[in-house]
Length: 413
Image 1 (tube, rainbow, N blue to C red):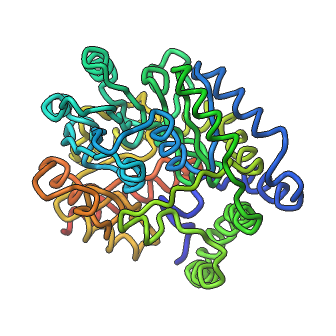
Image 2 (tube, rainbow, N blue to C red; image 1 turned 120 degrees about the vertical axis):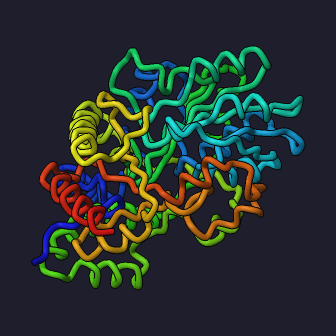
C-alpha cells in the first residue's frame, strides 16, 4: 500500500500556500530579478535581528562575501566544527584562509568550546558557531572567548531562526549567516544573507552586493518550478510513480543540485550574485510564517521526545522540548541499515548529514584540510546519526508512522 513519503528533502517547505506563491511568481517574469520583495525581506530581517542585512543568491556566497569584506588573508585561520557542510570550509578556502576544525560537544552537536580554545593561535581571525539542527551553540562562552582574544564571532543560522525576540541566536555574533535553501529554517528555494554589526565591514558588504551579478533567468525559473515539482511528486508517490517523476525531472535538468560535484571536491567559484527578487519573495513568505513554522517544529520535537522516553531511545541533553529543531537527531549503531530498511516503508531519512564529518558523503575531506582523528567525537557520531524530520510538510500522522516503523525495526535489528 502506497502513502505520502516521509522525508527530509522532498520539498520540505513546499506547502500548498508556498507552492501557489511560487507558481504565481513563475508567471510574473518581470518580478524574477527585481521588485519590492527583496527590500521588504531586508527590512524585516533588519528589524528582527538588529544589524545591516546584505542579500546574495546563496548562503555560501554570503559567507564568501563576508570573508572578502573582512579581508581574510591567506595565512589567517577560521575555526569551525568538524561536523559541518562542505560549503563552509569551501568559502574559507575561496579567499585563501585556513579552516581549522574543532571537535563537537556530544551533548549539542556543536563546537566543543574547550577544543576551540586549544585550537586558537595568533593567526585565528574568526570562529563560526553552527547551531546544528537548531540546537543552540554555547554563545555566551564563545562570545567571551572572542572578546578576550580579539576574534570575530560568526553565527551560522542556516538551521534555525528564532521567533522569540529575546533569543540570543542570530543576535550575538559580530555577523550572522542565513541560508534560504530548500531545507533551511526559512526557504526561498535559494538565497542567503549576511547580518553585520560592524559598520566598516557593512560598507564593504554593501559594495559587494551592489556589484554582484544576476542569476540567469533559466536558473530562477527552475527554482520557481521546484516547489511545484515536489508538491506533485509527493502525490505521485501515493500511486507508485513518484520516483519515476523525479528521475525524469533530473534527466531534463529541471532540478538544481544543492551541492555540485566541484564543491564536493573542495572548489568554490568566486562569483557573487544578487538574491533574485522571486526567491526573496518566497523567503519573505516563509519568514512571515516563522512563528507557525517553529511552533510546528516544536510540536514534533515534543512528540519525538515523548516517544524516545517510551521506547528507551537516548535523547542528547541539548535537545529540549522548547526547541524548534530543523531535524531531530537520534543515534543507533546500525543507522545506515535502518535507513535502508525504512525505504521499504516509503520513509527516506538520508539527509546528507550522515557518514561523514564534512557533509555530504563523498566530499574530499583531506583537500579541505581535514584528516582522520582531528574530530574523534564527530567521526563517531556521524556514523550513528539517524535524524527525524520536523519540516513544515511533515505531519503528525507521518511522525507517528515513522516512530512505529522505527520501533519495529530496532526491535528486530
